[in-house]
Amino acid sequence: GQVSLDWDIFSPLVRQCTVMLSTDDPYIPYNDAVKYFKKYIPDCQLETFIDKGHFNIASGCLELPEMFDYLKPTRYLIFDYDGVLADTFAAVCESRIEMGDSTSPEEAIAKTLDYANKKPYHAKGHNLTDEEIKKMHTWMDAYTQVIIHKNIQLFDDFIEEIKKIPCCKIAIVSSNARFVIEKFLAWSWLSPTHILWFESDYSKEEKIEQICRDRGCDISDAYYFGDSQSDVYELQDMITPGKLIGCGWGFSGYDALCEVMPKGCVMKEFDEI
Image (cartoon, rainbow, N blue to C red; front, side, top):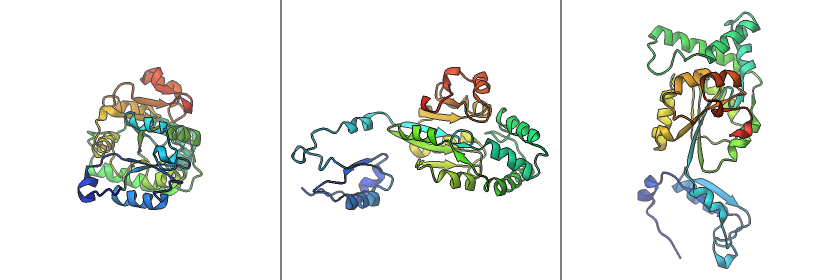
């Protein structure tokens, strides 16, 4: 039969929606259905099958076990960019030298690790002056012009593991520049709900607060995946214990992360997620 909905009333009420369609449905043309739902519920998640027909006994679809995945609680996953999703350590060090911030590879490595292993000076509650903030922006502008041309590789195997996780909403929080993140993440197909970079806010705490507000979830529901001691120092009082996860392949490294967080919360291998 025909179903009529007042979408002006219904759409604003939808916080989460998964639409399941089969390309061989004899009654509902797949392409038309996709356009229809994307028009009225733009943020809906599409689950596409190729062999289910119409979802009823008459059409031969007797079971739909995939439905159980969507009855599980949503996982709210927030990832750092540098050292977690992207292998940027060498590119960061090279960029420091090229922009004149460091005079040797050794100095560049030391400065990069120093930044990674202490609480960020621009964390929430900072007392930076206008002049210091201006200097920080000038540095980031110069850095962006250099690193944007580097050959940065994503941790593709880790990204593939993330894609296997059902019922999750992904966001990315970083202190890197917008153009750097957008350029390289375009190939990941992660479809994050948020990408918040240096220009969005200096503090990762405030970025995470914004994401949780937008999603309508509590901060206690969020997992954060970082790669540095600085992430721990900044977020340990915010993220629920056990949900602040270290990525041992990143900037600080596995051993250094184990010094500041429970060993059971630090991953060595991508598939441990």
